Image 1 (spheres, helix red, strand yellow):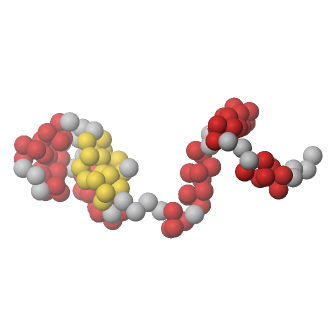
Image 2 (cartoon, rainbow, N blue to C red):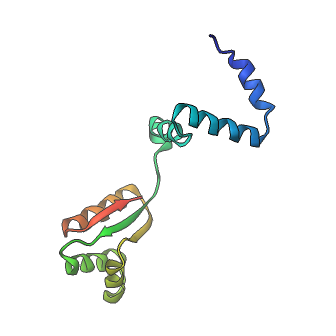
Image 3 (cartoon, rainbow, N blue to C red):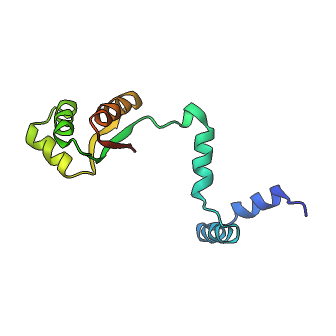
Length: 121
């Protein structure tokens, strides 16, 4: 069975948003896929043009050396000791929002060096 792509596209152009939503759900159910997966794959295939430009650095877990992590957080953020301690005690917490890739990786490596677990989002 050959698909007539032009006919399908014309049918989609004439469909309402509700009809298109129902179509997406039916395709997801029928084939066991998610509409979000192709978007992520397309973004990854797009290369540098689709690369993420900023990252949130999250302290996921402080690890065994909390005092060292607190000192490092204090140094990275410029906060006082009490604020840094609250951030570490409240993990998971965002250490830096909208950091460049280099800055985010630098912060991550500094925190991991003192035993923390860090996630870039």
